[in-house]
Structures are given as C-alpha cells and as structure tokens.
Image (tube, rainbow, N blue to C red; front, side, top):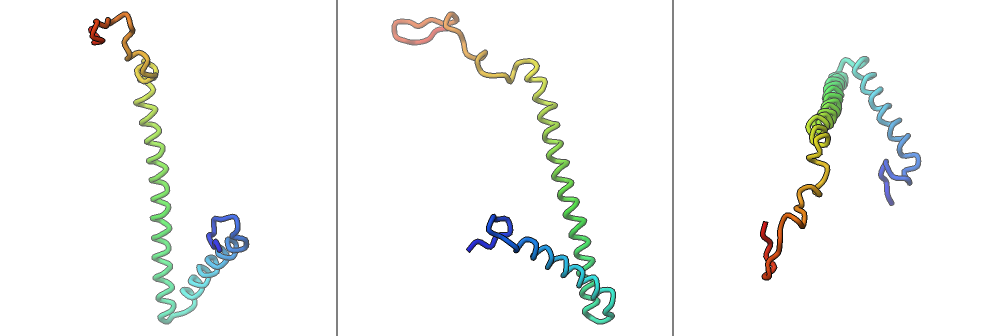
Amino acid sequence: MDLSLLSDTAGPLVPLSILAVCGAICLVHYIGDNDPGWKGLVANILRIVGGIAVIVAVWVVSASFIAIFLAIAAVLFFMAPLFLLGGASGVADRRQRRSDYYRDTYRYDYY
C-alpha cells in the first residue's frame, strides 16, 4: 500500500496532514502564550526554532532562484555572441571539403 502524500492514491491524507500540522502549530503557540511552566518554555523554544527554520527556508529558496536566474543570464550573456558570430551554430564549417585534400594510391589523405 502506497502511503505517499504525493501519489494519486493518497486520498484524504493530504488535507488531514495539513490540518494536523496547522493544529500542532496552533497548539504550540497556545501553550507558549498561556503556560508559565516548563511546557510553555519548551513551546517558546519551538517557536523560536520554527521561526529560524522558516527564515532559513525562505533564504534557501530565494538563493536557489537567484542562482537559477544568474545561470540563465550567464548562458545568454556568453552564448549569445557565439551564436551571433556563428561559432556555436554547428560543426559543418569545421569539416574540410573534398577539394582541400587528395588521396594517394595508398589511401592516405594529404592536405
């Protein structure tokens, strides 16, 4: 049985898992605000760690998009002049024509 959240047979697992995570986040916030004991301290530490994790995740995603855009820009910046000059358009111009060399009787090519 496939219990992946991304499969076609997931059924109600996706909304239930999202609801459970949202409930857990709300419960941590509630305990952190209303419990002055050790559970409140742990909940506040979890809030701080969760906030740092969100900031790091946003930074990683934005850095990935910036890297993708810089890679595309570098390819366009360095390859566009080559295509405009015809240097990267193919290998047909690198091959020599038949009139540029001759074969001797031993089948060796001489240029």
